[in-house]
Image 1 (cartoon, rainbow over the protein chains, first blue to last red):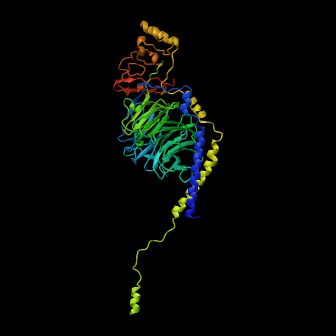
Image 2: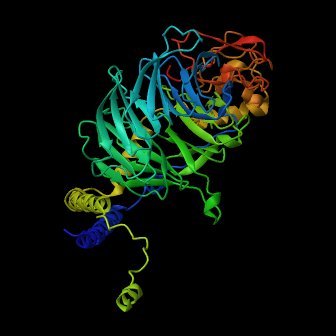
Image 3: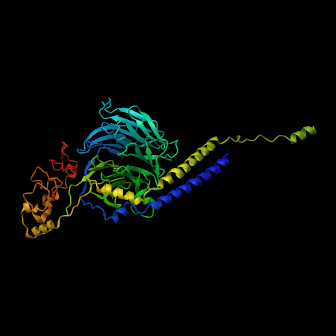
Length: 379
Length: 195
């Protein structure tokens, strides 16, 4: 076939794809009879009301000398690992603010970190295009550093996010600037599956975030610079199960809703959204009104749901950290306006395993822990 | 000679640089082929799977209902809880407030689940009453002092924001205690919502 013929076919196929996408969009629109907020309001729900001392900053974790990029909680014992531009991972006792480990990294350009389910290992990755695993119980080397216990190499681009598979100590999923996600066997260092890349239905640009379904660890969702989120089944690497459209900018953050049937996203377009995993429906947009200038819209960098799903915490590039009432789609609290709040961009956040505390990380080099102030109002 | 001159006048043109021969654009052609293949695959996927999957789907309201039901059926440590007092309770409180009775056992009479009642409880200052906190298990009976940072005490000092008393991580399984430098005492942990 000649190049000219190929070009004609390309144009025709592109037009067909666009027409099908438009038809799909219209079919979905026809099913969009309401959203979560509309439904909740029609059933008498009102926004929850936070008092001035209901959520307080009860810890400031100081120690990093560079921007904090990522954090993760353990499943128990209330420890946090954080990764920073200073080239270190720090493991904190969240209750006492003490640092239990400070790991100097070979590559200072770290972008992500994660705790293993058993809390004995941490993983991190970044511009070195690799994911490094450290065993916290290892003997330190001559320089007092914890040695790498395993390095996962194979990505052709930076590692943007990593997460251990919840009920499997030896498996880890990474997302990368090479447009793929990879499932790894940590004990052997081998790639088990590659999601995207050469195969169709993969992301078409950098993948920025990943979230594994805690209700069904075979499923995970990824967010990308191609403005989509995609659902993957770890048993079927050849294609994405579903693609979720709607955002108008990079999808920086994805996180499953506590029921495992929905997930949230945060994007450069300044909005967070709630999608239904099984059907692809966009159930709700969480968005604030801003000025006409698109440059004024702060980007959503990180998200987390409270344990019931009633609250969606979202960190933004301007230092705001909104608590959205997910049911009525209203901002009920801005941690950025509270006493002792961060002084820079919120880059990461996460809930403790029992849902009683939120940790935020910022470009101001600190992490902060927020918890309920203890007063319960009786009216 | 004339022939030589004629030949000289028809001398070949001076050498000039030549453009390289046109190589076939294999990469571009291959890239186009791959892109067409991907587009054809996507046409099949969108047409057969995506559009078909929408058939028989319920409208979005059904899934919104699921979200509402899930959220409503799960407790959340970070969400302020409000519950309405019974009308009779409100009347009692109003009455005692007007009469300024200083009877703690009645102050906490109206349905307050708190097992530990203050020795001093003026109904005008409801904030001092332990009714506001359901599980005030503070071992220190004088915890209403300004220096204490327990959240259940309305006179909680704001000078020790770092104190762990503000958190709700306390649990019967937890054994560590914090020490708040600013109030220079060992802060007790607040009650655990899981209890």
